[in-house]
Amino acid sequence: MYELKITSQFSAAHQLREFQGGCEKLHGHNWKIEVYVTSENLGNDGLVTDFRLIKEATKGVLEGLDHRFLNELEPFENQNPSSENIARHIFESLSQKLNRTGVRVSKITAWESDSACASYMEP
Ligand SMILES: [Zn+2]
Image (cartoon, rainbow, N blue to C red; front, side, top):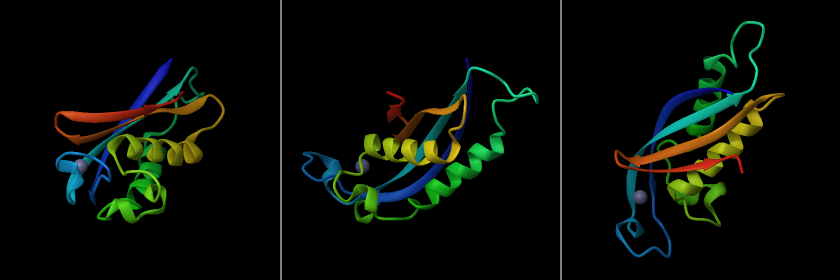
């Protein structure tokens, strides 16, 4: 199995509802996002896929989150914009853009600080 990883980032504000702790108050994070793409086979060019395609698709998804108040966005109307849910939202959006025969987005990791991250992966 081959695995590619790219990293990207976005900055946004959020507020976690029904959460007892510091994240209940409005605040921001600089999220660092890791995108993992896997494939069992390589194309004739020796690649899983072009890194540029992964980066461009990721940029498109993250532009929808960057410098926004996440609680006001449609994906988070009914669920907290936690790092867990952010990872799943990015996973689902990127899977629609990038998945094709044999090549799949396999995991998204969202780092909300240098020492804490949440991942969502293919069930
Ligand atoms: Zn937070």
